[in-house]
Image (tube, rainbow, N blue to C red; front, top):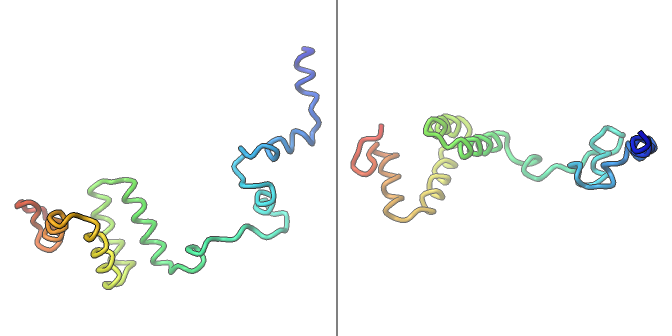
Length: 126
């Protein structure tokens, strides 16, 4: 019991601020943490993407992130619907071009052939 008393002898101020002295509590710093607690101080600045990007671009980017995480053929098929709804034809074309440019020539040809004609490596895929 004597050991328990010494452990419990911390002041209430020490208990309240125990995490703020050690940066393992998840906040970047105490100032940022206090601002997010509604103490009347302004919140940390938002990044440029959240401030200036068009909503449809943010939604398309978020959908792409989900699809990359899931990695299923159903998810990739669903992305088609999102891209059609959120991006203009010119934006989709530029995205397709940029993606194809990252591939080897023969692989890019096969993927473009599958997208345009439904044939991949000589087999019907649609």
